[in-house]
Every structure is written in C-alpha cells, then in structure tokens.
Amino acid sequence: MSEQAEQTAIWTPGWYELDQSLVVGERQKFWFFQTPPDSISYSFPAADSCDFVFFNQLDSEKNCTVRYARIANIEHPTLGPLLRIDTDGLDYIFVCADGREVVVNAEEEPGICYDSDIEVSDWSVWVTLAEISEPVPNLA
Image (tube, rainbow, N blue to C red):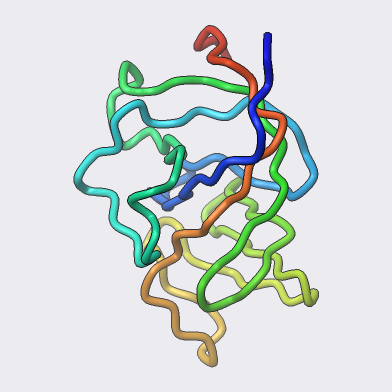
C-alpha cells in the first residue's frame, strides 16, 4: 500500500454529531466524500482545487471513500491555526493553536458561537493531510 504526499482537504460541519473529530498529528481512519454534495459550501478561494472533502453523514454512506491519514495542519480563516476540533456532544470545540477554546452549538442553533466576541460565518476548515493511504474497506 503506497502512501501519498501531503494533500489538502476541506472539513465542513454538518453539526448534530455527524462530523469526524480532527486532531493535528494523529493518524487515523477518515471518511471522505467520493462526490461532495452541492449542499456543502465553504468560503476558501482555492477550495475547488482541494484533493478531499471530509464526509459528514448528511449524505449517503455509499458516497464515501475511506483512507488512513495523518492530520498535518488545520486552518480556519477567522480563528487561524487549530490544534483540534472535538465533535463529540451537543457542542463542538475548536481548539486554537494559541490556546483559546471556541465552543459552538451543534444541535439547537448549529454554528452559533457561545463567545459573543467571535463572529464566524463559515465554520469550514482547510486541512493538510499526510501519510495518506490508498482506499481501505468501509468498515467501522
């Protein structure tokens, strides 16, 4: 199984605990859309040239491919570099490289940040992947 060099991916939240958590430095199994649905929108200027779009269970499980990869970098256009995104529970936590934790509602008012000083219109992040495997079977 040959591994590919670093490639880019977009992670756009579907909220409601439907998304994969991301942690810089960790290598794990990730699900990606084979064909991203039109409902996914993001504000990155070069997003159309990304290599992968993270799967978020809002679409059919038949529209995904599974690979192992290591998260090399996570970048949000407003928050800057991130160390991780925790998606377990009714709130998502975006942990910034500078130590800030931004808590975002993921159920009742998806995308609403609890910190009134932060205004974010798009929670999508740009992810650099490394050590990317060839596709593997879609088993949990």
